[in-house]
Image (cartoon, rainbow, N blue to C red; front, side, top):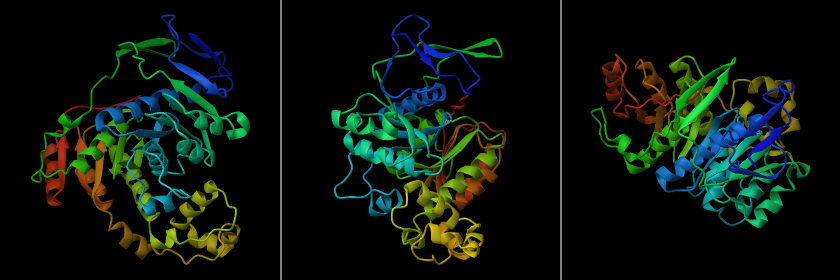
Length: 392
């Protein structure tokens, strides 16, 4: 089959809509359940590339959680620690499979932005992934294969309408990409630039010490940025993104946005947050929203209005501004990546406030010397890749 008719395009008024192969060959995807739409397929094909490349670069199972053609999160399949299980609502006995750990981490990077996501897996979807996804709000999943048990579970999600797509892992797209905008056709070569450890050798700071774990985090950052709408900046720790700032016109705004998300990810690990007691039967999205409000500056208003009783079994003790500031100051070992050069040292200053110790970026600014000087001031290690990663 070389064509698939869709209900509509980006919006209901944009008809007709379809995906098809211009050369008449078969589509590299197969819909196993549901009826994915235009944006679903944009997310599916972009997220699959990210997950596939991340596994190729690290050798580890990888996953991505996509929303509106940018990753809300991406991760490799490191095992979950106990605090991860609490943060990401991993219940029950036993350890999830490596591919399930990858997706749980990818979704856990920014659980609010992952609400209604598209999931992508580098490896076969197993029952561990399917069981976790069944309890989450998600639009669909793409993977190179599914176990029988996983497919059976996923087909029960959303009243049997959950979108499940299988992609041919051997598919190789054409070298040239075409895109129409306002009736004008754009053509460019595909971005086949390979991201691997060789990119990280040009360390320009006085501190040259980048441990293997941080190098893995640099690869996670760069590959995530390759499939994030530009401008974009990405914070990574422990093999998973913890803050993605996408599509901002100003680089410092990207750095602040991603840094604020990284701070929120870290605050979710505060003992007061982990100790919150919720009313029985509350759904995961409601818990996520409540936690987001609890760690925000809006919490005092919620307490005053008494809304906490709808969510919490016990009135929570507020997390004060001083406690939040002190907790964020403990964050360390974070890697920050940028899809284009940092034009000023202010980006380094902001990244440092969220625990950044390692930076990877293309370099090439007329103020590179100032950016390097700022990194040296805080004993940070920074690598220049020499390659921009814009994506539109």
